[in-house]
Image (cartoon, rainbow, N blue to C red; front, top):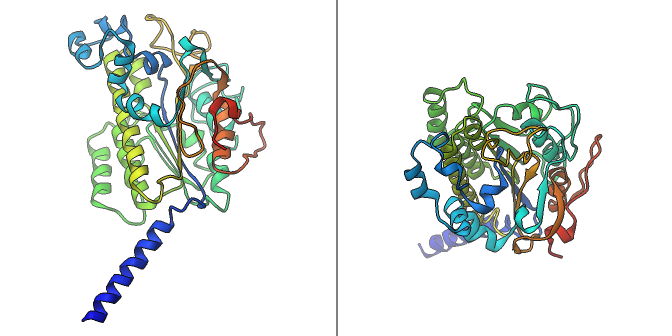
Length: 368
């Protein structure tokens, strides 16, 4: 009996050693890239807008929404809207884009709409031929497919997005990494009870005719896959902020942004509670474009609407210094993120198209 107990203990010890070995620092790094569509820098850094939150044209119940997201202090307001970002993320990472303190992040493409913005983000190239949000297979090579074609990340890349056009932006027809967009159900080798529930909810409850999936379903689908398969490169693309803005629903815009903050918090906790990801994972958070800076233009974004080019950026991870909110930085561009993603993964992104260089070390304060 004593020998049997010892065998069991040794077996358990070996299993634990094998489990924790997967998180050794010499393992290839991981990354989570997270976006929310068309969200303004003004709300990221100032919280709710004083004019919009009081306008019954854009808010169903101004008194109720102010109970949730209003305070006279912009520091308090932004923390009410993004509690995790400002209480935790800012202490461990770096946040760029507050133009009030000379921190600028911008898109390079002239059009300032989603397909062009996401193409720029993932390919490092502001393609002038992308002039509309249409079902067009993207011919530019993106950094996710590039990583998926390396030995370190082969079949370890996954993308989950609310907007259905990501099937075309990331070119699902050409690429072999896992892409789950719009109302696609999650299909894996083995199905869990959670997976059946998520797929069932999406199929029978949600209006599958809309081009954007509910962000919570996108998050739950991604979380289920990540916990089961442990991909090393993960993209999460949320869309409700832009949908509510285009509909002129400022209350929905704020509530979906607040939910986005909770998704970031859960990703951060997942990373830090899982030895596979802990201490070896970067997080990049941004948006695809800005939107109108005035109370009369905030509902739209295009090449003619001032403010549409304004973006923001959040970075966290073992190679990123915890500088908090950054001021007085040289202007940074979304097109530089593709090469920066590759750099954080210890490689150099090459493709047929012209690729913008990484964000300079002085900008993002990369640790040596």
